[in-house]
Image 1 (cartoon, one colour):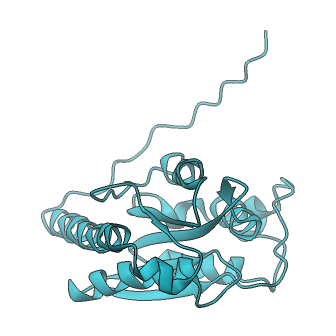
Image 2: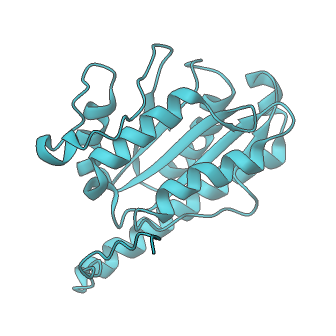
Length: 207
């Protein structure tokens, strides 16, 4: 089993990465393979709602890592998305990345456990945590919890390492995700599969 962890910070080895590392270590301790994917510091275009992905099976934009991630997501068993707090919300890069990845690759995520990790100096973590979790709850994904909301505090990686409660929350998250992944795997071995959904109903609020 494998979990993809996405670092939505422009800093490859900053505070968000430090938190994700702690989650990854706990997953690996429980026998789950991990890979941390860096969104990077290059511009990532947002979704323009063109619908081309419905025909192409991928986003029409290439070269910024979104389509490559969706291909990896098809084979992954779980996900952790991490972001620094920018104006009480997720980074613009991660928001653009997730908008396009989830729109173009929805089936790659359905039924797979997910969690988010938020890093902030002081405030805005709760609203960012709420924002990222909405991608999972609209995509039929089990949301993995910890012993507290998945956030760390600090302005540098060294400060994050001093947030002992935050780091413990990350380790608990990794252990909880490993447990859920193993439960799902055991269920599959007994013939329990993800529910077949009803035909989608879309109600537009127009009278």
